[in-house]
Image (tube, rainbow, N blue to C red; front, top):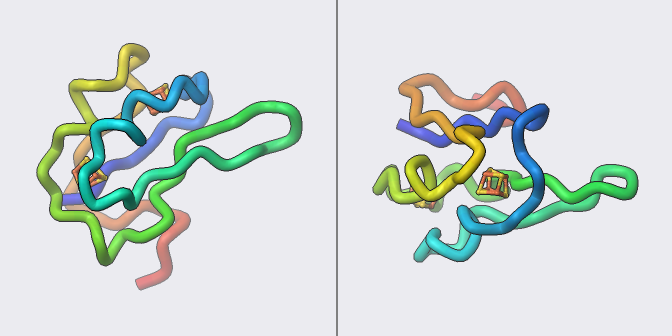
Amino acid sequence: MLPHIDLDRCTGCGWCVAVCRPHVLSLQAQGWLKRAVLHDAAGCTACGKCEPRCPHGAIQMLAEPPISIKP
Ligand code: SF4
Ligand code: SF4
């Protein structure tokens, strides 16, 4: 299981980044906005804490890897 981040819903608030113990989520600039990115999928423990922490419902834990992560 890995978190999938809906970039249309993500406001860049950073709550998911703060709750992620292995620090595999980060905020990255996309134009003048910031969005959460899973920058180290291999380091994700699949704890699922980021999903309920997102106040905007932008994170979903799914079995398949995110599109941005190459197999
Ligand atoms: S908690 Fe949700 S809205 Fe906030 S940065 Fe993370 S994914 Fe984006
Ligand atoms: S599932 Fe856990 S380890 Fe993986 S990104 Fe979310 S908070 Fe971090």
